[in-house]
Image (cartoon, rainbow, N blue to C red):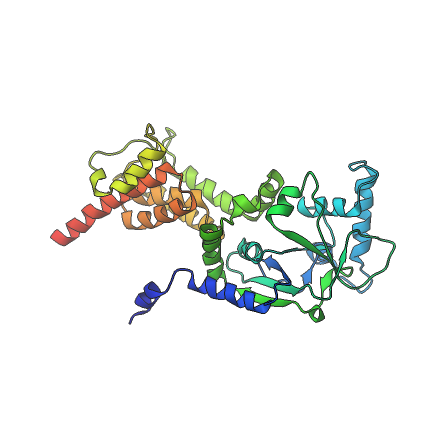
Length: 373
């Protein structure tokens, strides 16, 4: 049996399901919390602990993350951003979710949510999922900077006006580590997630659990934070769109459909899907071109979309426009594969349904021609 045949016989997402079972076995009593990181850091650490490293400053034994955090909290209070009675936990929660430096290490009580964070970003790098048993770990209700502690503790985030949406959807819990790190003797276990498995995990989480960027980063600050991870992909995507435009502004999204490009009766499901979503829309039509300059321009656009998708494999817009560019230069088989994934990611994209129908129509004609030859 060939390797391809073996892969076809496997159940979908078999490797993801095996990973989830392995994680569940690591905490059979359900007393664990989870943290996902898209790459392997040297330590399980807080943002403030990593400050010196990020700034190119050598960290020595006198570095105290708690001192830096106390200064940030005091600065927020002194500027009157919170009422005098606001707790340190409220301020720390908002700082943590709005990109501010804290000594909190974010975990989730939801294993699948942590798995998303382990797979979100850093393509080509191993991600990791950290499993920490909460047995024997004390719980705090407030941070007292006048007490000198060294042991880690659990801290429930405050459900503030600015952060409650993220706290709830991410099932958040913080680990407060006075030294900024969780040591190996705290009993943390780590599962490594390969770059290939990252993409499969994200598809699985979206399809079966509705866990994806739109649901996880469910507020404006979260959206901005998440997009920072994918800015390079956005640059390549915009370059691809620009290469597809002609001097008259028409391009990959041109509405002109060359007669006879496909027969709707060959693929009724796709055309029905398009008509149900956009019964009066013709904007999604685009040409299959024989112009050599246009083909070259579209081919270069595909290269940029490839780069964007390497960084962000589930970039629905990049998949959609790459499929249109591929179809326009006469590569319907590759276009169908892209349209398939674009529809899985964004089933309400009428243009993707239409494009897949056109691509299947073209593919049918080319296969017939090959058979006749």
